[in-house]
Length: 349
Image (cartoon, rainbow, N blue to C red; front, side, top):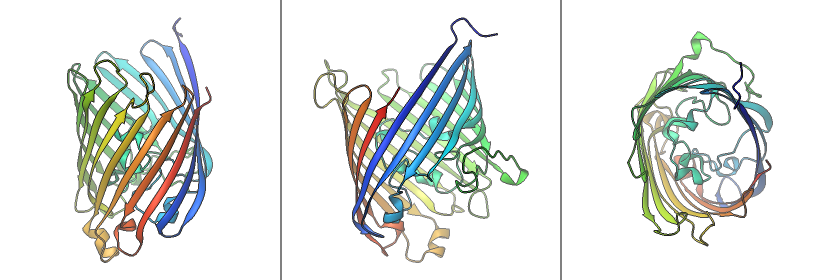
C-alpha cells in the first residue's frame, strides 16, 4: 500500500512577540503574544500528500489597544489550541486536487514580498478577509481546491469552501465540522502568471461569498504583483523587490469597499550569505457605504509599516517592527497609533 520512498516530516515553530502601543488608539499598553505551529507532512504513496497543522495561540491582542480594523498582528487569535488544517492533496500530471480543512490564503491572494510583514493586511488583504467569513487563520473551513498548471508560467486555481467556518468562540478547537445548507459557500478563482526569469508574479482573482456578514451576497476582484527590481550579479541573496495589492468589493460589502498597498523589500543587506530582509509598506482601506451608515463620518484606514528581519541561524530569527496606523477604525474618533513589535521566531525542529 505504501510506497518504498514514503516520507513523514514534522516541524515545530515558536513565534514570540513583545508588542507596545506607544501612542494613540484606544490606550497605551505593552503585552506579549505567542504562537506555536506544529506541522506534519506525510508522503505515503506516489503523488499523494497528507497535511496536518495544529496551532496554539496565547497572549494579548494589540488590535484591542489600537482599535483598528485591519489587525496589526498576523498571529492574533484567542488563547487556545486548535486543529488548523487537515487535508489530502493528489497530483495528476498538470492538475492538483486538495480536499479537507484548508487555509485559503496558502494558495490564494498571496504576495511573496508582503508576507514578510506583520500587519495582517499585507498577508491577505482586508477587502477579502474582513468582508466575509474566509477560511483563513485562525479558523479554516472544509474545502475543495483545484489547481491547473497550463505550462511553466501560467496556473489557474479555483476552490469552494464552506461559507461559514464559525467564529473562534463558536469553534474553539476547530473540531466542530458543520456543512449546513444555511452556511452557504465561499468561492474563489485566481489566474497566476510568472515570467520566464521567475522575477515577477502577476495574479488576478475573483471571489464570492453567499454568507457574508451583511444580508446579501458579497463578491469582489483583486490583483497582486510581486516584482524583483534588482538582483546582485554575484550575491544571489542580495536584491530589491516590490509588491502591490489591489482589491474592490461589491456595494453590499459590510466593511471595506476597496484596498490597495505598495511595498519594498530589500534582502541580503549584510554579508554574502545572510538572508536578512528590510521592508517598508503602505496600505489603505476605504470603507463601504453600508459601514458609513453604521459609523457616521467614517472614511478610510491606513497603515505604514517598517521591519527588519535578521536571520541569526537556520533556527532563529529576530524582527523589530514599527507600524503607524492612521485613522484607527476608519474614523477620526481615535488618534493615530504608533505600534512597536519585537518578533522572535524559533524553529525547534
